[in-house]
Image 1 (tube, helix red, strand yellow):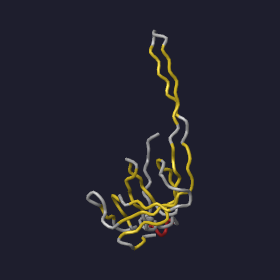
Image 2 (tube, one colour):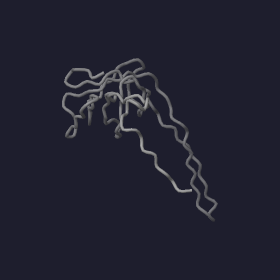
Image 3 (cartoon, one colour):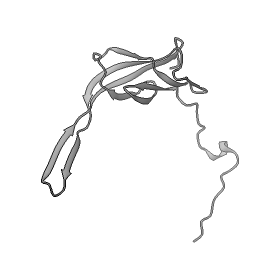
Image 4 (cartoon, helix red, strand yellow):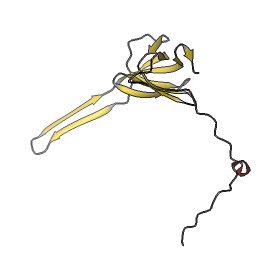
Length: 133
């Protein structure tokens, strides 16, 4: 049976689907040698941060900030931009097994690794002291 394509109606309001709203603000930051896409009021697991639980950490290495309408790209960092994080807990990641074997040599080695993580909640993203969210 041949494939037939159905054209949608020309007016989006008559289709009954909701209209897309403006995207939430976000920032791309650099920490612990990695880049993370952070949004306000969400939690993330980062590499272990030397901070107490319920303390506040500020990240200054912000590569990009989007306020919902226009992105601001840094060269390499956005001047005056910062992301405020609240430390929720210190955790450990899932166990990774590493198994090394040399065939025909009777050499086998099995080791494991668990990454030390810190769960943080994004409190606010601000540019030049003005919070975006």
